[in-house]
Figure 1 (cartoon, one colour):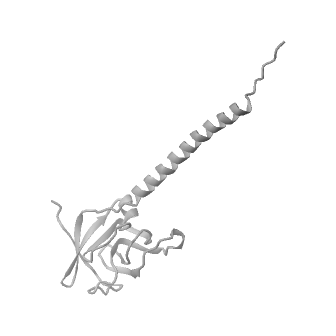
Figure 2 (cartoon, one colour; figure 1 turned 90 degrees about the vertical axis):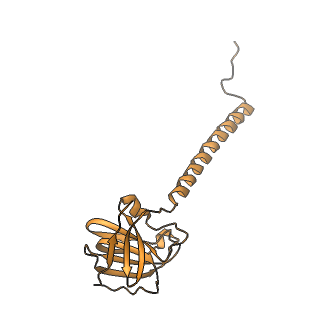
Length: 172
């Protein structure tokens, strides 16, 4: 009786592992590339339409309104620059504990926490950009609205208790 070797030869075994290794490598590379592309896409800045104006003396700052959760999560992050006449207003339906950080920001901002009548309840001056998530400062306060504007504007010296003049503009 002749017995056949059920196992493969060494060369067949290594050839099989070679093919398996190539397939596994291709799968891993595909997963890593997909993750990198998704990460890069999530780092695109958002540019929302201007819906309001903040008047500070003779100066005006155009305000984009962050109203949805996704808009609030991204905020002003990943913008290369922020013009001195531009800011973002985060709007909550009711007073809420709001926590913000400057991860992904490219310049310092002033953060103003507001009540429903636009009175300032907390001021954070010159919040610097943060590059390492674990080291970012978290700025928190209960507020109906939060305003982010470029830091150190020549005409801005905001203080707690001050009521801001924010005007909605009509969308066309």
